[in-house]
Image (cartoon, rainbow, N blue to C red; front, side, top):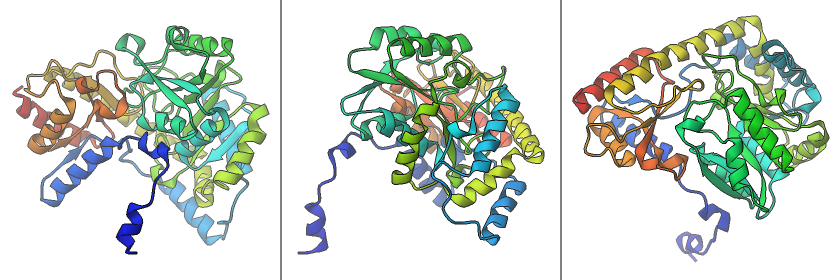
Length: 398
């Protein structure tokens, strides 16, 4: 039997068919093809900081390698790192988080997988806002659950509110999965909105998973963690965004004390531990020198936002609510002076081919009016953002 005929007889698990392609990566591939053809493409598509880990963090990684501290850690993570994260919560938000409750994970994605493995059963429904990060619904389906996408308008800051919980909770609903600030919208839940939503879930005996990976990149106000509002909430965080360590694959969870043994058992069996070298490097993130760098970079992201949002509005993109975190703008294209304004996927491809600016259509992020929206990422240099706006202006006749 040939290898080809063998391949045709292999059947993948049914869950694979429920996972749609990650369309942002399709846009990345199309942009790469144009670059190889010699085009100057400005990427405003991928949600990855253009900054990388500071030297103090890189040096800590090298020291770990040369020092031979590269073997497995405890499944819950290095005790020193868990303590450092606890101290960071105390210093930045005045929260007293027992290091025992902190679970170090192989990125926020691994944290979300662990949370869904612990809490989502076959047939359980999990509410999440539409639009939201596409992988969240796939984490739920991977463990037999059913993601319920709840349309959230700009009046809701594109977030899940208590009224959504009241309206959409059924006998099959097990909990909610939200992000604040959010990808793709860059909007946070207000403290009152978050408090009321968590209270509505708690009243129904459900779980709440709150993704806070962009909370370090918050502008205009002091962020409020869900940990300050509900002792039973599970939060997800990461070293990828604020700490600029995307490829290092390191994140963490904060879980209720009673669930620590559950998460430890799952981590032991599913991941063994997070990358050891990355854990040792991350300890340096909490040094004053590194924190000064991260704060300067946060301010630079805010400078980019403050330029980009008014510029997009001037071009005819609808941005009804100012994004207050992360590095995304979720923009309505229906008022643009362009023949493809009713089809964000076709529009995005046209702008890539004609203006050489890569953005992401709304298809990835849900089913509530995706054709009307695109996502801009401003995780690229300020001067390149200015050039992108100039190119779009020429293309749109503004």
